[in-house]
Image 1 (tube, rainbow, N blue to C red):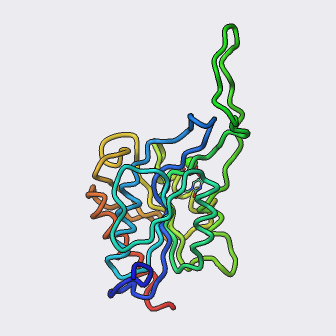
Image 2 (image 1 turned 135 degrees about the vertical axis):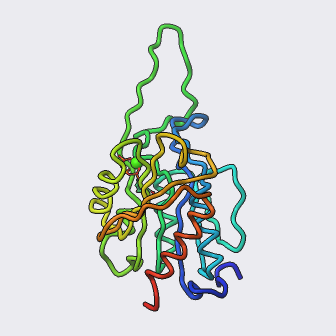
Image 3 (image 1 turned 60 degrees about the vertical axis):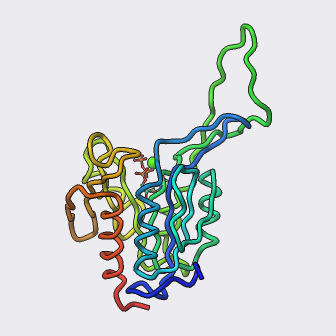
Length: 227
Ligand code: CTP
Ligand code: CA
């Protein structure tokens, strides 16, 4: 039933949401991750489901419950997240709320790295991860009609978000300031700005669920009657 969605303006729509951090191994016991709680991404999956969409939520490791009525695919690394997203296509809408690690350790050690007398600390050789949002937004037969990204910034929020909109090829960027107050990692509130090709819409500080519901309604209106 979960895959069928429900009644509402997004009934019959397939949507993909990414959420949470990715974790990238250093060795079997150590990893690189980030402060994403998954709260905003999971709330968006819930809100889209409330409007009737069939939702696949691809999530890195988080401490919060799975939303009801949503297919949840749990992953760890960025490369696993990309693979799971591509497996969830085709979709009408993709919302990339995950905090994807930009880099991974080039060659994770097969065994736990051990200390030894007189041996200096290891240095980590990193390589770039794939950009999931840019990959989903790239032109092609499988491109969702609407591809939405996030921009978490600590400075020059709108300028960075506009640059991301262009660089990623997506249709909309939800920009939030993670430097202080509302929108900080792990909190329950968020203040966002919708940055699209035609301008910027400033939203007030709201709970993450309220942001999600307002965003879901906005996206449902943008998708409109296009089938
Ligand atoms: N994103 C992604 N895959 C990546 C990196 C980012 O899908 N490898 C997505 C995020 O989910 C978000 C958007 O791209 O929707 C912007 O992420 P962000 O980290 O703010 O942008 P970057 O392009 O990675 O730039 P930077 O971290 O340098 O600001
Ligand atoms: Ca990044």
